[in-house]
Image (cartoon, rainbow, N blue to C red; front, side, top):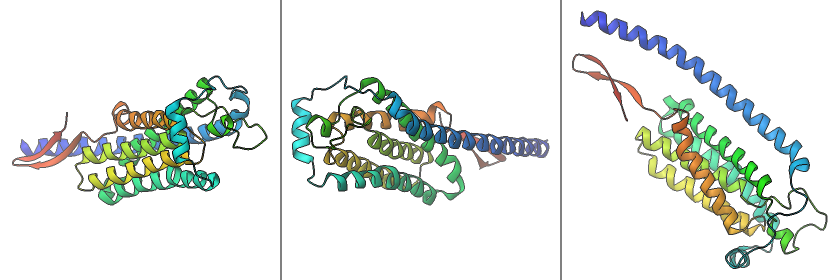
Length: 250
């Protein structure tokens, strides 16, 4: 009787594994397609959708003081470095450390983090176009003489939001996996995210409150998107005294 039950369970798990594989492929295709659509639309629509005049033009004492303290004389170098930390090092660190911690679940661990990052960027773009805050370089007249469609897209910081989405998303997954690399994943991810936020101010692209808004969006995406998509590891098969046992976390 126990043997028959064990065989039935194995067959059921095999069927679930096949279904999971198809589901995984579908999710990866959706992530890839949504990312391509997002990037393409951001490039093509910014000139048409971005506000020509700032809706939020004034600054405040906190943002002005932070700008004066952090802005670099070489703003271009700060901008380039922020792109490297936010869009290259942050995802490489998050996904690489998750893979190093548990290579057997690399795809399942990467998907919720990528979904969180994508969600953070979509929300950030919607906020940018809706708020229409003037960037500091445009406000203080330190940028290019020719107006740009980017001049009034200061709030919030997309570089900061994606860096925090990768950091918190990877940390959340690592925590649920119970990996010993969790402290390293949190520390490295948040350090890169904080550095990205600082560099966006140093580049005169964003105010302090822009980066705080980006950090909030990215952190919320990293915490909640994996839960909303059901991506966090909840169940696993473990050996029991009389056969196979399903263990879960609730």
